[in-house]
Image (cartoon, rainbow, N blue to C red; front, side, top):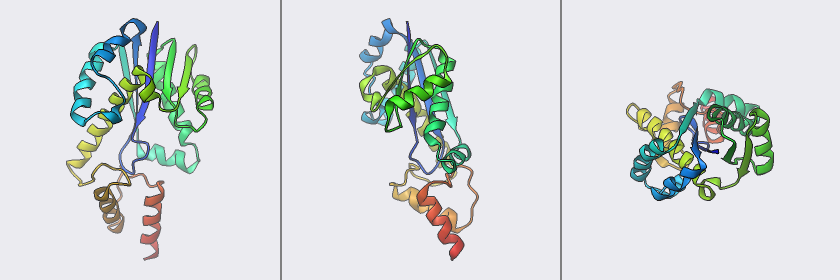
Length: 208
C-alpha cells in the first residue's frame, strides 16, 4: 500500500516561488523515515533539513516537487483563489505519485473542504486533509522537508544577485530590499506584487 504526504513552503513570502512537494512510500517503510529523525521541517535547522533531504529521497519510493511562480500566485490572489491554486498543485503532485491514500497539510480553515477539493482533482485517491499535518504525520513531515529545502535553495540562488534576506515580510532585510526596488521602479519577476505590503509600497510610489 502506497501512502503519500504533501506539503508546501513559501506561501507567506513576498519573494520567490511557492513550493509544493510530495513523497510516496510503502506503508511498511514509513518507520525508516522515523529512524532517520524526520519531523516537521520548522523544528529542524537548515543543516539538518539538507541532510534529511538526501536521506528521504533515498528511502521513499518516489517524490515530486513543483514550484509556483510569483506571476501565477499574483493571478490567483487577484481572483481570491490562492487556496484553490494550492489545492490544484497538491492534486498535481498526488496524481503524479498515484498513492492509495494521501495526507495533506491544509491551508484552508476548513480542512475537510480543502481535502474534498483536492479529491475532485485527483482520481482513485483517498485524501486525508488536516491542519498541522506536518507535525502529525511522518509522510507529510518528509514532504515538508523537501518543500522547505527546495524553497531555500531557490532563495539562495536569488541571493547571489540580490540582498533579499529570507523573502518574508517579517524580515527587515527583505523589507528594505522590496522598498528600494519599488522606489527604483525595478521590474522584478520574483516579487509577488499582489501581497498587501508590496501593494501599499507600490501605491505610495505612484503617489510620490
